[in-house]
Length: 629
View 1 (cartoon, helix red, strand yellow):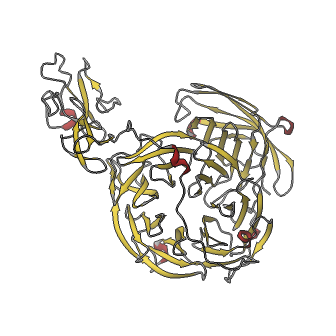
View 2 (cartoon, rainbow, N blue to C red):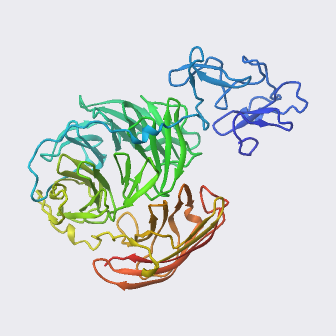
View 3 (cartoon, rainbow, N blue to C red):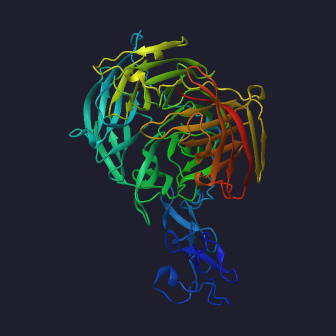
């Protein structure tokens, strides 16, 4: 802020426009005049910025032949100061600007800032992943068996190099808490426990399988674990917000080929502030990050290249393409193709698979298709299968053909009382594992994974002595099948947005409908999710709201609104829109009842986070919605 008004560092300022704004603090700019001969004395006083100088801010001659401070990224710096990926010196770029360059300026490191010339080569989008060892040969299971481990796990990862599962174990575990549990999935036993520190949560495995990075939520830090020696190594804090204090990590990912480099998203426990992604090398942050002035992210998806990552804001479904270089991370563009629930994403062969059922091709930026599955997701390219763990209170795993998006089969594990599964991972040739909200880790050898292209439906047994009522939950719902949103089926969708560009949609051709009611659970109330999508000309509409149940009419406040057409997206702010349902009529029964739902959505001015001046003129709909018993 400059005198209470938003401004950029390095911009012209003052009554005559011959001053320059410089950073005097994380959020404060000052205006420094060009010279003492300035008739306007634009610089004024630095007292407000520094609190210690009441004299006019008059520039002095600098080492680059100009007047006033030398600026790098809008911040005063000294000629020759350390900078860049190789810690070379700052060189004169103009009479007031510095550039980060090599010893003879033959090598130029782009300034770390929003205008960094970070480019993503086209080849990066088709990069190949690491060569993974083949899993041990074993007979295919004819029936699924599962083992339950009593572990208060916050996250799970599988390491194909050492054939081990790793679980971050909370302090709730007691004496073995605040550790990483090393699990042999073939025997279902914990073979080692590695103490790491206060409240370990999310983890990221290096692409060589030798390092594991662990978020320590109780210590506002990250810690690296050497998986070869089985010991905890370096730990570093994540910095702090100038007002709200320490940053804590939301998510972490490792850069391929760089086991000591991680990408982190951050949040504040004392406010709603979030930040990132930020790139750290051995605990040292690179100069520039997306920060809170961009569309901050919750999730980070590392690709097969250290030059490219994807930053995802889960609640609004925003996915941002980010370029990475020695100076930091730079958001290149953003879209809102689908909602990605937190902890429900997989990346395989340059496709992002979402817990909302969508497959997103990173090269084209298009939605490849939508699976009927919902919940934690895992993908197996060798078998061309995508698996979903039901996020309702039943341990049901469903398999889909990766290419046709058609269901292959499902199985429900009998693992005791009703649970909510989290964090699905695949292991070995036929295994999968997940953690639950009841502090269990479930490890299964699956006939579903062994079934290949054969359909399989049924229930699986359990090697433990737990009870068998998991499949009896009324929330154990098969997801609805998508269908064409045609006028013949009574579907209607009309959207008019006045803006640049405008949006005019009337019954979009070839769109698929996948709207559904969902019952509540321990984490959230009942919800109604409207979902329309067209993969040919990327078009998607997602509107989601709590406290809406089948047959109910009235007005509801959505918690997520995302409209996408081609490369344009409108991200609705939750407190700016409301949905009015005038009809919710039962029209069919079966495994899931169907409802005809009619209504409209209206939004106030400034409703779109990224298009504040656009006006939602009309949003009317009639659609079939899958219900629940």
